Length: 500
Image (tube, rainbow, N blue to C red; front, top):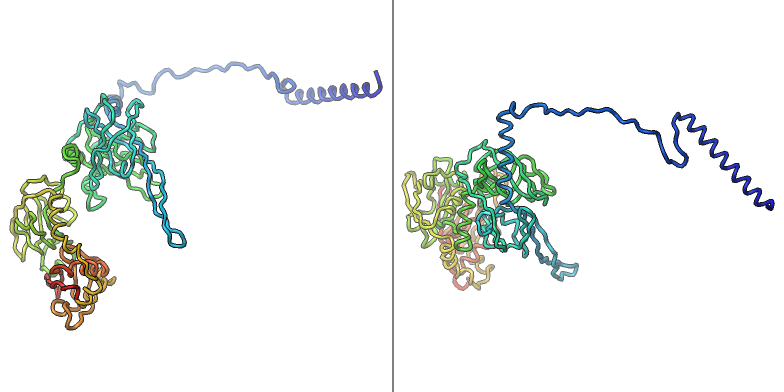
């Protein structure tokens, strides 16, 4: 064996010996044997243990709570098979403008998620309109995981309800509608849906309040503290019998960018939903009542002008031609005090009541007119029929080719918006600030007149007023609803012939 090899072997042996010595010292200091290179270990001694084999309370001792727990589970088992998860997809077109003013279109894919509830054995689903609005593809996932495409049958944009039809033969398990008019504040309810796309989720709470409002169009909602989160929209709010008493529609959240449940949710009462469902299934669209009046709020200037002593009601600003209101004898500046026995507090409430009235029903209204209360009866018609009549009446104005600037010069008036002090007094409309001598306005208007409407169109700004005035005065006599020296008046401006 040559010298270099002997040296290498000697150094190797010295290294192994040193490593073994260091390891032995460390093991001795730790008091435990650890095999070199991390293998092996201390032998484990089993621990003695005894688990509790009895519950803290016997179910028989709980009585009501035990039965309530079982009833909750029983209700959930009965309701969940009727609730579906809804996934939507579509394409939205956006118009973009570059720095040179050129425009181009960009198509962006959109996706949405919500909930719904099966309400017929044929597979019709009720959900919110905003869940499916503008989406080209609707996919419904049933209890158990089966997924099917669905077709939009119809919708009610104002109530925020849509009706879908599942593209399958079923069988389906529908839920029954309950009578929402019997719901009481404090009543226990359950919200079922798919929050955040998590699938079947049940939350429990009570009806916190009734007749809540999110807008003038959507009124009389239930407020509930049952947890409702994004994705719950369109799911049912059910009572202890497993009946639908509402369709969950919205939540209150201080953080609009990242909305979450804060103890306040809203549901559309089932009676409104059921009526809309029947109308959509029968006609493909909702049917709304129509009276044919333009309304105005009872602000301080109107109360003073009419010398109306009350605090509540809705002022009739205009009565539309060939409408139920005209046939019933309603007049401008009448104050409607009640509708079918329900006291009127503001115009939004009256509009809601009229829209919910069945077509063909006769309604009774109590009306204040120049210091006297009278009773008026009107027969409600379909809103589409009323809308067609109103459009025909205004068709000439829309077809006008007169130059708006020429029309306004011929009328000869300047107007201004209300100032801060006037708005604080509760006034609404615009003020005549100047009338040109010898022009049309000089014969009919004065500086300081408060104009609240042009024909049947309320005005809130000077620009709004001038647009309506120019469009109307070129083709027909134009009615201005004004308040002058505390008196409500109507002023008729003649047609501006040939725009001058």
